[in-house]
Length: 176
Ligand SMILES: Cc1cc2nc3c(=O)[nH]c(=O)nc-3n(C[C@H](O)[C@H](O)[C@H](O)COP(=O)(O)O)c2cc1C
Image 1: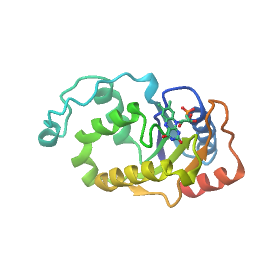
Image 2: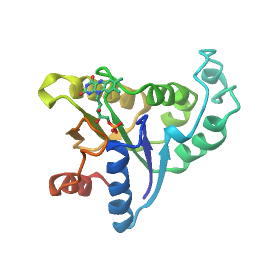
Image 3: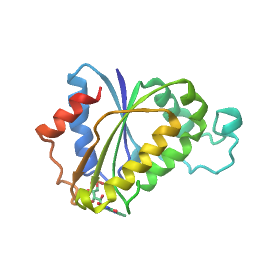
């Protein structure tokens, strides 16, 4: 399977550490894996023109339109990996989501699989994970993605706190 990992973190921290491990695990399992670190890609915010809803194409000529859209089309599955910011997704990732409005009609015809990794400093029962999962679930329904059965949600604050363990590896094994 061709898998695109989208890293929505604004720093080289826990999400980055998970993504490095995931890249190795998925590659070992025979998948072709590409990593998109949004931090390394500067693209404009959606200007809200809605022209893409008529044309299927974004009017902004930048690396989102030219590099990221082809990667999204080429992949069979995605992993969205990110930290939680104020019970929501980080700004970089929100902009990524908004720019995918140009792909709505493409996704109507094409089903992609989606797995999610979230990291936040608060414990799971404090609601941050639930609100982001609900948000991504709604986005995923709009885009017709097939969600994996299990998500990975971990608690960490400092950038080097995350370590992969067997429970996480077991969930990854069920993803693709
Ligand atoms: C602006 C900002 C807002 C945050 N809001 C939340 C939050 O609502 N809930 C939470 O659990 N953690 C929150 N955090 C903590 C981060 O999710 C946490 O530090 C995480 O480990 C960062 O992941 P990273 O190292 O991959 O960037 C916030 C961090 C920042 C910078």
